[in-house]
View (cartoon, rainbow, N blue to C red):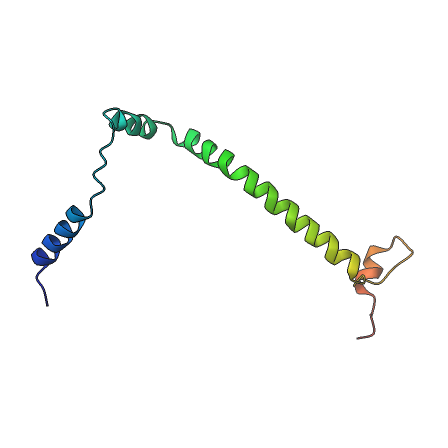
Length: 95
């Protein structure tokens, strides 16, 4: 089994060989710190705004599927003509 120091050196060499040779511009650190300085509520609001379109699309698809499934199926509750909800709840359905 290899020693952790050997493994660490291997990983460092591997990453050094495959480095993209791209360095961030000087203002990169300032932009990162500015983003980290935001309040958590502001960050959650921005995340919610980014997810809003996908959420609305999912709601629309689920509503469409629900409407399609409801149109094809038969009602499961017995039809009552009166306003007696308690009687409808305890009514024997013959099962």
